[in-house]
Length: 197
Image (tube, rainbow, N blue to C red; front, side, top):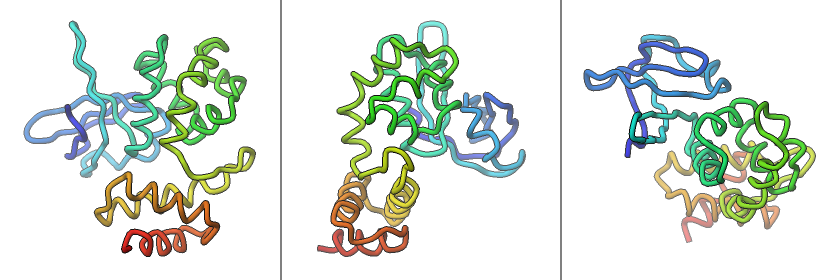
């Protein structure tokens, strides 16, 4: 499996990019929400990818973070949700908003995505609620989404320091649950104390 592609951005469109790496050009389908965050053509970038091999095609789908990719993979596990619909969901909604909607059983919010009906929305909630509780274990204010950005940024900082994803999730979860910190910097500091034990 191709976990990520690192190389020079050769071309970018609203729904796909091409990265030149090792003498090859990799066409990668991306969400429209990722497009404005992309570097300029000619610059070096890294994109987390999911590879899908079918009888008549081999496609790469690209994501800004491993968390967004994980949500995409979970969406694909739901019958009736294919790659195109999965990318459409993550184009119209932020991945953390998808998680929050599933955890709060908000099928009306999910149904805002063009092409995603109420039945499929309810199916996504039914099949993914328990999985998302494990993927996204720290508390979130259902209305304001408080805790989202701070916790996610802290987790990605810990990953950059070399900690495993499970360790980072468990440490930040413990800090937030214990109300030991609220700012990103404090969450990282308190999490490092736990990880040092």
